Amino acid sequence: MASDSGRKADSFGVDRRGALECMLWAGTGVLWTISAGVPTSSLIGSAKAQGAGLSFVQISDSHIGFDRPANPNPLATLEEAIGKVQAMPAKPAFMIHTGDITHLSKPKEFDDAAQALGKLRLDGHYVPGEHDVIDEGTGKAYLERYGKGARGAGWYAFDQNGVHFIGLVNVVNLKAGGMGNLGDEQLAWLADDLKGKSSSTPIVVFAHIPLWTVAPDWGWGTEDSAKAIALLARFGSVTVLNGHIHQTMQKVEGNITFHTARSTAFPQPAPGTAPSPGPKLVPAGELRGLLGVTNVTYRTGMARLAITDTALAG
Amino acid sequence: MTRLKWCRLRGTGIVMLAMAGLFVSAAAQAEEVTVTIDNFTYKPEVLTIKPGTTVTFVNHDDIPHSIVDNGGKFRSKVFDTDESVRMTFDAAGNLTYFCGLHPHMTGRIVVAP
Image (cartoon, rainbow over all chains, first blue to last red; front, side):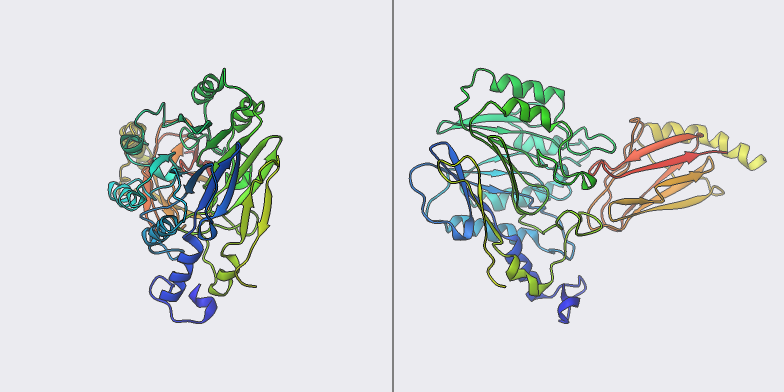
C-alpha cells in the first residue's frame, strides 16, 4: 500500500495512515432487519432507526491473530466495527458471527475475540470458519467455547420472532480438490429440522463458506450445498448469510437470497482479479472509493433483493 | 547400492512414524528438496524423489496452509507465513495431498528408486 503512494512505510510496508485507512475499509458490519418476514440489510455506519421488526447484526472474518501487512491489527478493526454497532440508534436483538473469529485457533486469539465481542452486550450466535478449527483437536477449542447445545461440528437452529435461524458448518472434513463441505450427517439433520415447518416460515441460514459457488478455482463454494438448497427451496423466504470471501456479493435463486459479508480484518480480491485469494493490500488512494461500496436491501414485499452501490468518493 | 539399501532400512521405521502423524528429520546422507507455497499453489505440483528424501514445505503466502494426505495417513500441523514443515518419504509410491484449509490446493509426490 505505502509503496504505491510513495509514503514512508514501516517494516511491515504499511504506515500509520495506511493502516488507519485499512481499518476504515475493514471495520464494517451489516445490520439485518426482518419485517413481515423479509430481511433488509444496510451498512452499519449508515443504519437508521428501524421500525417494528427483528434486527440483528452480522460480523464476519475477524481473523484475530493475523499480523500481516494487509492489516497488522485486526483486533483494532474488530473493535471499530463493534463501536459502530454500539452507536446504532436501534439496538440489534443479537449478533451472528459467520466464522474465522481467529486466524490460527489459538487460545489467546479466542480470548481476545471474546473479550472484544463481549463489549457488544448482545447474544452471539457463531459458526466456525476454517481458521477456527486448526487447533490440535481440529475444532475442539471452538466447540468448547461455542458448541454448547450444538450438534456435530457445531451446527444448530433457533427461533426468534417467528424466524427460523439455522447455523451450518461447512469447514470440516474437507476433501482434496474440493470446496466447503456440509456432509451427510449434517444434511440429514437439516432435513429433519425443516420437516414439518410451514413453507411460510421465514428462514435465515448462516455458514462460513458461501453456500453457492462463487469461484470454484479458489474454493469459494460448498461441494454439497445443492442438497441443502433443495431442502430449502419450498420455503417462501430464505436468506443465506456467509463470510469467507471478505467482500459483499449477492445472488438470488428462486426464493433464496444469498449474501456474503465483509471481513472486519482485511479485504480479499474479487474472483479473477488476482493470482490467489490471499489478503489484499489496498492502495490508499482507492480506499474511500471502496468504503461503503455496496448497500444490499431486501425491500419489503419484493422477492428479489435490490443492490445499491454507494461510494464515498470517486 | 549400499547407501540405497541403508536408506531403505532406515526408511521402514520412518514411514511408520509418518503414518502416526509424526515428522522426523532425514538421515544425514539423504537428499533434501523443497516445495514452496506461493499464491495457494504447491511448487512443484508434482515432485519425483528417491526413497529417504526429506521434503521441506515452505509457506510464502500471507495465510496459513497445511499438508494432508488424501489417503488419511498423515496431516501436518498448520504452518503460517515463512514457516515450514519437513517430511521424510521412504516407501516407494504415489502420494497425493492437499491443504486442509484450502482443499483446492493439491500436490503429488512420486517416490521412486
